[in-house]
Length: 179
Image 1 (cartoon, rainbow, N blue to C red):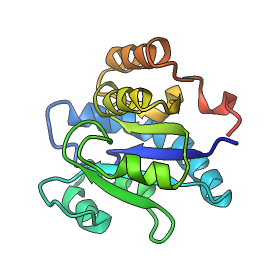
Image 2: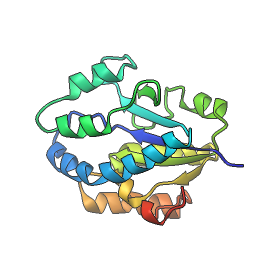
Image 3: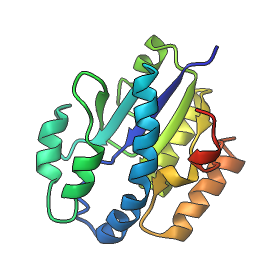
């Protein structure tokens, strides 16, 4: 029987970069669908794993990262999507992929996970690179189109197309999935 984990990528973000405001606006649209599935995962005792940029803090302390990233643009998003102590896993990553330089693959093996649901930002960068690395490690991929956001809708759609056509990901909207 397959075991599935939900990966939430880079949702704790300061949006303090070119196109950050556009990405924040697009991110607001994916929070509710992600939180709906997250609640279902927690209710079923299925793993929820946050993987986030470290913002040069280099500490896997989500409260520190949330404090550092909180500003007028990010505060509401961070409050809504914040990890829960003693329920969620939290890892930091040094580069785009959630697998590169992290303990993610080891954690997934210990949890006996073979299917990943990917959610987060930016869809065309960190989510796409994570999906590629997961595919190369032979994980089944589910990446609902309403779970990822990029600063540009065309880039987001391109990433979804690549993940579906090249990485064999199921990209149907979350409402159409049986999770």
